[in-house]
Length: 354
Image 1: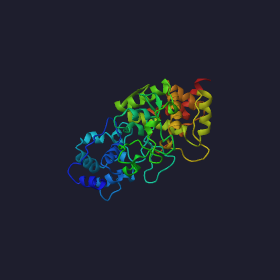
Image 2: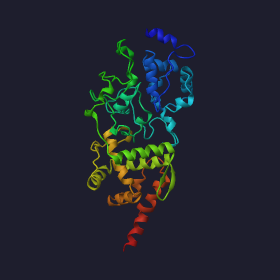
Image 3: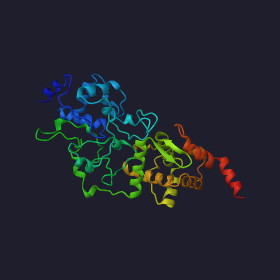
Image 4: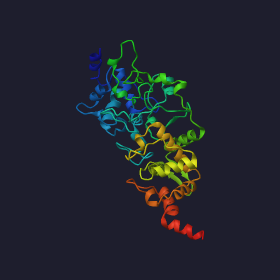
């Protein structure tokens, strides 16, 4: 049966012409397409690019126009609609350029499964409400930790066995002919992730964090944000500054000091283990850890830049610590450091109070 279906893939159009759903992730659509043809995703990818390991790297960050063109032609899908399913379509809004290991894009390990890389989140209630369940593109973003529609914290692994979500390893061979092809089956224990849409796995979110994430997503869509003392700022520059602030909160050299300050001043406890001495990457943190970080950032952005400046001064954060990064520092963030937290500005403040 599978061999017969594979033979049909040699024509101009493939037998099944599934189109990406609203905000569907490219890899999610490809997995649904493969299962609909009775194939593993790896087999379908080989037919798109013979001799190349298309899935060896994160396909959602694919910039290869030849791959996208072939997929568009074989499924009669508009190229623009297909491109919109990639994470690269956020380029210019989320970051100036998005490649592999991109900022804000959750890390996934596809060649060898990593037990602690939970790069694909999901809302089981959304999956349950879908006629044909699929995974959303924005679930791959590091600042997305909750579902506004269901006011619940997202899940980032199978709650039965703890395995990361990896539909790339789903195979029709594991199913009987009486079962429908589904994308939501855990590749490790076969649990249907839609079964997790119960009170047991429901973690409610408060209005403040819901409003903050909604504002970040609106900024991403709009392409700009209004900041005090700066006016309109391009969204990719805003997210770059946000990334710098988070970088300070997870910097191993000052993390313990800041962790204590956040707990004492704002009651925010970062559930991140800094004792290992290893460098912390935002994109490798799980959903609970990123939730704590976002709550901290949300608090520091209140009444910008006064709250942030006061926090930095009270914790003796010198300007060189605040802008230490291999990435360019956006002007709206650099300006606050230069005018309020550099040695010159601190000296002026000291003189004015004496």
